[in-house]
Amino acid sequence: MNRRNTAQKRAVYDCLMEMGHPTATSLYDRVRERFPEISRSTVFRILKEWAGDGEALRFSVGDGEDRYDATTRVHYHILCVGCGRVEDADLPPMRELLEFHDEENGFRILGHTASFRGMCPDCMKKTLN
Amino acid sequence: MNRRNTAQKRAVYDCLMEMGHPTATSLYDRVRERFPEISRSTVFRILKEWAGDGEALRFSVGDGEDRYDATTRVHYHILCVGCGRVEDADLPPMRELLEFHDEENGFRILGHTASFRGMCPDCMKKTLN
DNA sequence: ACGTAAACAAGACTAAGTCCCAATAAGGAG
DNA sequence: CTCCTTATTGGGACTTAGTCTTGTTTACGT
Image (cartoon, rainbow over all chains, first blue to last red; front, side):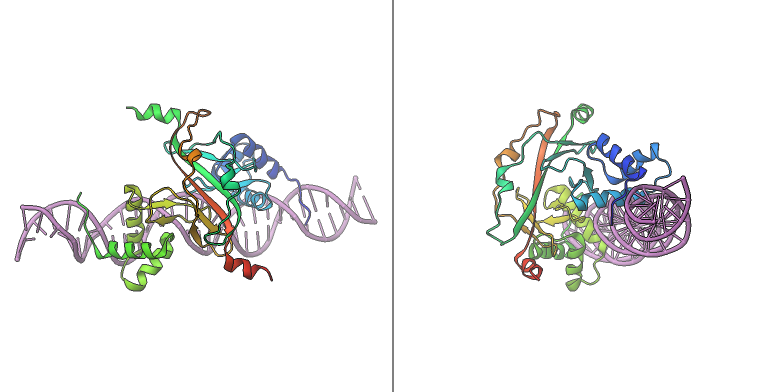
């Protein structure tokens, strides 16, 4: 019942903070550099637990792999379609999305997400052959 | 090079129109009721091709499985966290999202998506024990 | 009717994510 | 500080969305 503070959790937390919006696999690769004996399932389990408890955000930018974010307040993301990088969008939460009520279908709205697709400066350079 | 009109494509198109926002697998199951010999990879290939050509929309509502939509204009979706149903949100495209320019990171923005999580009327009934 | 290349069926393959279970270790009680 | 309980871990099996390959079929222009 009680949560325990383990070296594995500290390592995952540190890497999550450093990396910003990692996928579980990329976070696993990073953690392993410092903590080689950590297991893949441990990383996935820790992230899933944090997301379930609201201690981390789990989201998708539509590239097929879920991402995690230590910042849980509402904010939006940008995916670079060139290299897969994800950054925070510099845009405040939108009132119309926060306050949306679904009269049409009668859903009780619990939350929303939004994300942009784009191309980062590095990939734009590489693209103009 | 030339596109060919096949019975498989007609069947996939018909089911896509009927179903609204199916996942590839659910669409495959539906198509198979009328076209039992169609193969799974054919359904995935057709949907992928249409999404690549802009003839269909491929999107995610964060439940781990991509969805397809014959309606390609910008619009938003609602996922029922109870039963997994997806409906269109009755909300026009948001100007701030359409016109967003990313000064912060310098991305060239190509598009955006947004979706809501919520609970549908049926699931709300079932939930109030 | 024919030839060619697009499309198909079948199934191997990849990878994200989950689940299971025996072994380990955190941390509270004494 | 030591012991005990049980949360957590490591390792690996398993599931499933999605892709890819290959030999066969078929749409459609000539």
